[in-house]
Amino acid sequence: MIQQIVAAVREGDDARVHILLQDFAREADLSATLALRQQLYRDLDTDRGPTRPSKS
Image 1: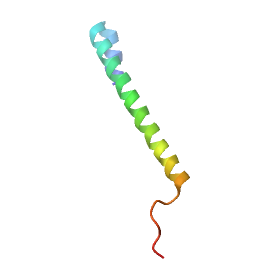
Image 2: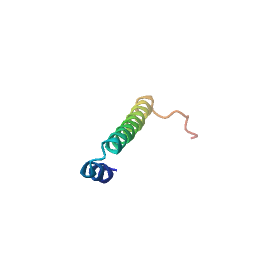
Image 3: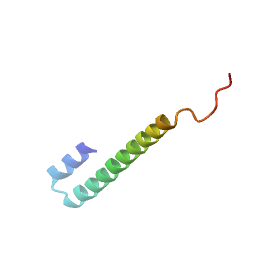
Image 4: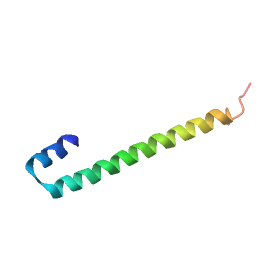
């Protein structure tokens, strides 16, 4: 994606640069959100311990 942004900047295609930057920001937000969610649930699971009783 970054290579596409660089190419659009070099070509002077402002509209394409704008769209690509918006897409990049959305993807970054989504990735950050998913990573945060995974970390929060991992921390929550660690705090709670095992959720199912073990069969011993």
